[in-house]
Amino acid sequence: MTGTSTKSTTWKMLRGAGLAIVVGLAGMTAVLGEDIPTCADGINSDDCMECNFQDENPWCGDNDDPVDQMSCTPFQYRPMSFNNIANKDGPQIDEYCSYSPDPKNSDDIWATLAYDDTLGGWDSSGSPAPWPYPGVRAWAAQFNGDCSQAGGNSDYWVFHACDGAGIQGGDCKGDIKYVERFGFTYDGDMEDAGICTPDGQGGGYDDRMYCKFVHPGTHKVYDDYKSGWTGSTNDNEDTFWAAKGLPTAEQAFLSAANGGWDPDSALMQTLSTFSDWAYGWNGGKHPYTWTGKWFSFPMFAWRADYISDDHDNNKLSYPTIAENGWKVYADNEPGDTGAPPEVDFILGGLTWDDGTPKLVFDMWRSDADGNMWKLNDEV
Image 1: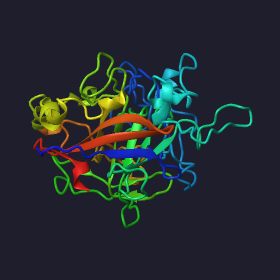
Image 2 (image 1 turned 120 degrees about the horizontal axis):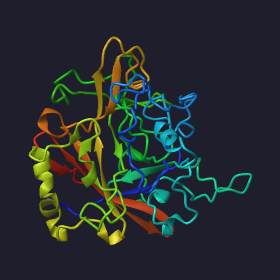
Image 3 (image 1 turned 90 degrees about the vertical axis):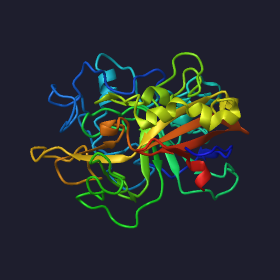
Image 4 (image 1 turned 45 degrees about the horizontal axis):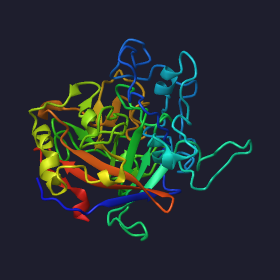
């Protein structure tokens, strides 16, 4: 574990950067109900070839305009399963699920995270039309905390909610309140077999294979990509991890397939005293309680697993891996180590400056031995 610092990072809305569309729905569970099989066969909920309740046309990525393709992620296959499950007995959610005409005063943080109304856009019928369309917001990162300067780093972030982004290879879950961080791009083209670590080597643990991310719309290859979800909320009193009603990492130390991370794992032991050793200088409080809207969420490495030769499509791996037989997903699986070997923990706060929303945050990274260090301090 490292020492601490008060150095922070600031996000501002970034137009034209992006790859995602987001819409939030306060209190909505971030995965499909366990009682409904997620695979299209109506029986299974893992190693799916395609997803249950998929749209009639479950495809995206028909052009390479990054703005037009913001919600086309992480695959070209976008079944909209969560929305369709929610709407199976009548309309419940759509791309406006967290929209507010007054996001600054809204209790729903996704009204700001996922909608860009700074242009005051309206469509021809007089309805609000957030830029570039409902539910998408891209944010630039400034590790120096100074949004008045164009420098900082190459990161940008995209928050999703009800746009159908985020479906995961294998279990057909995760297409709600997805969040992505896009770092440095790779100096090379996509490959049909994927650009991945060999099993058990490089970034691999427990024979985990990690891959560079290929964006389904632009086919741009990202050397540094992490993703996760903001759908787990703190529904009780304020805690270190989040104010009441806001996203909390504390409820996300698990995977849908294998349950909670082992409390005796090195990472969970480190996290058990995280607030004390990392933020003792702040009385053990979240660093952005001063915003009144503090929150947290984890982000994960991009992993691939081979299923079988009988898996004769690439719907839940393309374009990261174009060959048949694979599933690709954000790696929140505990595995043999009891917790994922690398996790990024985002501690953020939402504030406003002259009517413009800003997200200030600290970003921590863990390793397989349970060590954690603050990434803000590395740049």
